[in-house]
Structure formats: C-alpha cells, structure tokens
Length: 483
Image (tube, rainbow, N blue to C red):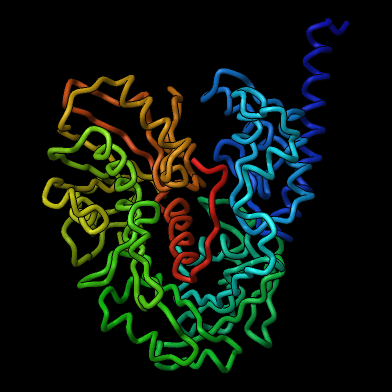
C-alpha cells in the first residue's frame, strides 16, 4: 500500500515533470524565432531534456537560501514568450529568484518587472544584425564540435550561418565518412538531430543547415563566391598555420573577410580569451586567434584572483588528456616523449599556456611558469594553479569569491564552480564553460593558494571559440539580467 509520503513525492515529481515538459517548446521557440537563449543559474535550457530542466532548477539551492520551483519560474518564461525582444542570453532563474525572494518585485507584476529588467533589448526589431557566413577550414575534433554548435544555432534567427566546410581531397566514400564522424562521437555522444548527405552536390544537411563540402589542398584553390558565400569568416582549425603569412592565405580567397585561428598565434596576431580581453577585437581586425584550450581555462580564473587578491607569481601544471598528435602505440614522433603510446602512459610535455596568459592579461607577464602532463584520458583536462598572492586569505573566503564570480560577474559564462565531493573528469564532458573551479580541492595557507580547475578541452573551448566568432562578426548577444 502506497504511503502518504510516497504519494506526496510522486505527485510533486509529476508536477515538476509536467512544468519541465511545458517549458521545452517555449524555450525552443524563443531560441529559434527570437534568438533568446534561456538558462537557469547558468544552466542552458535550449534543447535540454525535461530531466535536465528539473536538475537545473535543483542547482539553484546550491547557491541560494531558497529553492526555485518550476511552477515559480514558469510564469516568467511564459511572459518572455509574449515580449518583443532582441537576441540575448536570459537567465530566467536569476530573474525569478530576485523577484520572488530578494524583494525586487516592488509591487510590479511579472510582466512589468521583466520590462524593467530587459529594457535594453525590448523593441529592437529595427536594429537587425546581419547574418555572417561561416566557413570551417578543417574538420577534426574542434571543427566537428564547432559544426555541432553552429548547427545548434541554425534557424531563421541564426546570426552565424555555417555555409561550408573545407577538407583535403579524399576517397569516393569521403562524404559518408565525414557525415558519420559528425553524427557519432565516442566522447561527446550522438549528434542531437538528423544528418543526411547529398552526394551529387557534396552537401551535408543537418537540422536545417545546408553545408557545402569543399575539397581543396590549399586556400588559394578556393573561390567561395562561386558557392554564394561572401564576406565570410573562415575558422582555421587545421593547426597548419599560426602566423600572419600562413593564415593570410585565406584572405586571398574570394569571399573571405576575416580569419579566426583555433590555436595560439605567433607574432602580433591578437590572442583572445573571451570574457577577459575580447574588448581588443576591432572592426578592422582581419586575423585573430582564440588562443589555446588551456589558456582559455586558466586566464579567467587568474584574472578574477588577480583583481581581488593580487598574484605575485605562480606555477600552472596542466594535466591534459591526450590529443591526436600523439601516437596510439609507440612510434616515431619528432617531439620528445610524445612518440610513446598515449593510452598507456603519462607523458611529461610542455605548454605555452602560462606565458600565453600575458597576451590576454599583460599585468601577469613574467609571473607564471607552466608545464604539462599528458594522461591516458580522451577528453577533459585539469589545470593545477600554485599561486603566491599579494594578500592573505583562507579557503572559505577564496572559494566564496570564486562562487560569486561564476554567478554574477562578467566572467559568469567563462568560470563555473562546483562544490561536489564526488566529481571526476567524465562528469565535465560537455561543459560549456572555459573552466570549472573544483572548490573542494582548493588549498589556502595565508598568501599561498592552490586551485584545481577542470576544463573540457574540446567542447568548452569550442564554446569560447563561438563567442569570439560572434564578436568578430560584430554580433552582440548580451547576458541578462545585468550584474
């Protein structure tokens, strides 16, 4: 016989599930039709399952004194669906919590409160931002994840339009193989949607995106205008070129306006860590680098710490998943140690990430050293930052500061925070943040601090790359509510 507590729990769960299922079509329509990305305390709801939506609401209790129930946030989502809004990232959880629990209602209705909080993006229909053609040059690990992210944004309100992918000439079944690699991924799982191919026209069709596959041995062979592509942003993820001369080849191709490198650049090319120095991106910049995955993971956290406590010096050790440039089994490799089997060994290597931080944060130039250990995992890495601070603190204060940074700061899309005592690397696969602070591992002794920062070196980095792409295309997608 079912007890009263069991019935109560089952009723409560069914109510939550119903609200979550009702939220799904609203978040989808807001995203597709208006370019509004809905989240709950930083957890995205676009394309989320009903269970993911419930879990996002549960996460609020980790940061606030009160729970936020789905029935409490649902009216805010309904009200947003009726508003005339420009594209933005809107955290419905924070808006609802402030209205319900922080005394900010001030006698206003939900609709009036939202009109006040979102005034900067209301009735912006006349200020329409143009769509930017995008070409992915290369289709490896980062290229395929960028494709997934861009396809995820496909629709009538998409501002970054993936028009083509350039790869080297392959065999007869190359198109099928490429589509299959996009469709299935051993680390990131199955593609969320439908993928078909048009072999006659060399096209991959995915969730409404019509992507031309162009075969070429070098940029000089390509005339993008012949495919109806103009003023395009080319994202080079091949790793072949890292200087202005090499990357400048793309600008010689007809139809190309700008180039973004998904690796650290040499020379005077700007290395951008979005959230830290993206204000350096100017309209007339032709070539920009999105730096490395490790630089993106550590720089936002280092900036936050330097702003509050000051950093005298420190060392960053990267525990990094193996990458495609290593060998599966022992074989010749031009770099030291990397010839040994990647799935079987920890391999001491080097990283330029610590020095590269200075390109985004000049105030830390010469203050950091760095090294790396490649480990037998396919994805998700960790940076261990051993820092000497300019003022003393303790573990609780430092962690609380970083928790607040992750929730309410200009770095909230870059820095995530976990208080879990059980989290391991595979739990972070698919993280959309540049880095995740593991607060339980933090060590503080006066002016010395050791921090552990997880990062999905593939997907999290790709999300940062997309943010740089938007900035290069002069597409402004604000995060609301304002801090």
